[in-house]
Length: 353
Image (cartoon, rainbow, N blue to C red; front, side, top):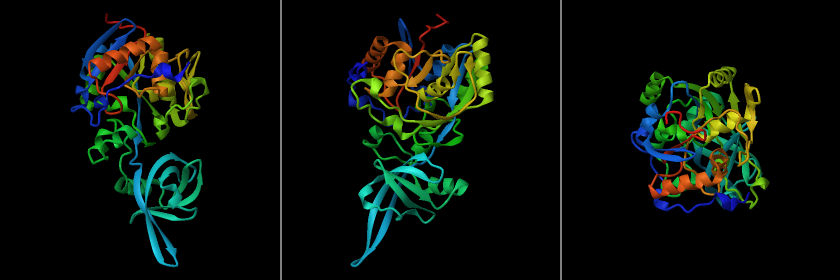
């Protein structure tokens, strides 16, 4: 298929720069193969059925955007350059990172971010730098929390800077495992009250971990999508989560991942006999024609034109159906992207009628 098959025109004023407040007041488009209903996220307690299982990504976004400086000694005295860093992927030691301007640093130089945090430039390759920080473990997490900012997506960062509100807004209610540099944004619509209400309804939850990387925002640059190379992200499906998901499937319940990250992970761990425990890096690329073996539905936000996530939702619902869903969302002025509204995609229809 061609990249143009996943394009659409989006009015810029539909790009959300702040989330709905409260979280559960965001709009929810519920779509089956032949019906669209306009609801609110709080209506999930009516839309979801007893026996459904939501699969939730418990990754925790780190404040991965840093501003620092490097100082260089020369014949005319010291010169200092301002350096912007966005952490991308944890390495065996240190992080790969985007450094701007990369030409202003040399291997071996120190970038100082605060009195408690600095990093040495170990190497540079493919437009990225390898940074080795002077702190590890909990000490690193504490210093990063003090010095860093939340790594808002480029389309929000272009409209406003990150602030203290984003430290709460851009984090899920159940965030636990630090390591993501982007949020599993469909999950941002939940709060504790909604989780408790869903539990009382008979909806169950399983937690998996996929550390969302900045590659989620990389544009597709090929005309034939079969030529696209997907970025890799680290994930884990525990034995407990796998057993829960298999039990729900065996009982006839629906498996509904909240977010494309959770869906990609459980389909990575899927077999013809169910889902198995799994740990590692996944670069699964889900496009039309993909056979879903675990996911029965998907809750997700509205995605960028010509993105791999548009291809994923088109694989679930069909290309033409997704076009009609997005046409409706734009006409009804749903808010788009990370801080925007949500959709619940039900390719098998709505059992409640």
